Length: 142
Ligand code: AMP
Image 1 (tube, helix red, strand yellow):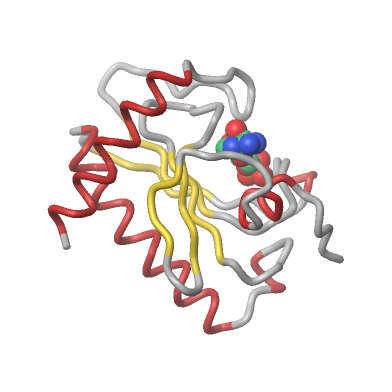
Image 2 (cartoon, helix red, strand yellow):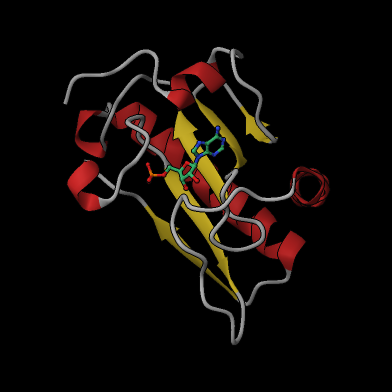
């Protein structure tokens, strides 16, 4: 799949669009999903330009998985969610809406259905408050 340099995540990575940033290192970047399926829904992406998992280099895949685990721990601690769903879609037919490979970290809460995928924008103040909590949990986990 060819890579579109102007997809929304490429623009976030270049700093052209805002995000509620959670984490960054040399190879990966993470921020809150703007239309969360549950409170704390986060996204982890490689900086390497790749549309789908199959296009990603082994080094970028490894870095992305390590960041996904690190952030999953922090999201779980920050939200108190007893479970997490990790999801990753490849291609529009599979439900992918942004063509830059990414992993979803979706907290799951008792007796709570997940909200629809990429449907409803969250309150910006609620996202900012969640960001504070996740960043604090990341710092605490070291
Ligand atoms: P996917 O459908 O797997 O490609 O997931 C894309 C995700 O990106 C969806 O969950 C959207 O809610 C989310 N999303 C789209 N635009 C933005 C944005 N500007 N900032 C944060 N998350 C976004």
